[in-house]
Amino acid sequence: MAKTVVGPMEFLPETLQSLSSPGLLLVSRDGRGRPNAMTIGWGSIGIYWGLPIFIVPVRRSRYTYRCIEKTEDFTVNVLPRRLADVAAFCGTVSGRDHDKFKDADLTAAPSLRVKSPIVEECVLHYECRLVHKNDLNPKTLPGGIRRSAYRRPDYHRFFFGEILAVRAEPNLRRRI
Ligand SMILES: Cc1cc2nc3c(=O)[nH]c(=O)nc-3n(C[C@H](O)[C@H](O)[C@H](O)COP(=O)(O)O)c2cc1C
Image (cartoon, rainbow, N blue to C red; front, side):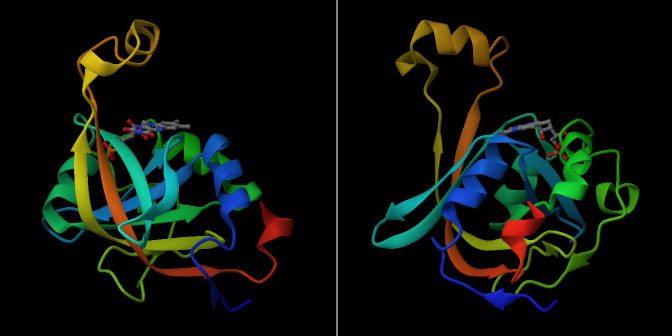
């Protein structure tokens, strides 16, 4: 069924539920324009500077980190339930040495407003343009969180993306 343009906050509960399990697909492009998908289990949607913003936390070690730094946009994609395994795959191998779109049989389709593509097989897509970034400061974290989330000093950079377009499948609530 054709996807339709929806408001940035229209499917907030569904997006947050998928974020916690199985995770969302964060798609960016590398310097050669090759798309790459990585799984995120953390993130948030809100309003900053009067704009709808998707914040994605990406550790320095990820290939995605370099991709977003270089190309300054990304998409966030919600998987249908039948493809939940794809989140585990895209969350364990790196785009440095894998073409994850090819290996997971995913289709990179054009976005409406950004250069990073959407994942056609997903049911909801957020298209985001990088407007700000912030590095996590481990000194201000409670020790318990620091010890459990950062055994190595591989800290997150928070990328703030202005949500420029959102598209959804009409029957998405039945598919996630
Ligand atoms: C369920 C799940 C959630 C994840 N959440 C995050 C996250 O929020 N931020 C992050 O940097 N890595 C997260 N990861 C790890 C990355 O997805 C993983 O390291 C991935 O292989 C990085 O891909 P890349 O090197 O192609 O960017 C998560 C992995 C899984 C399985």
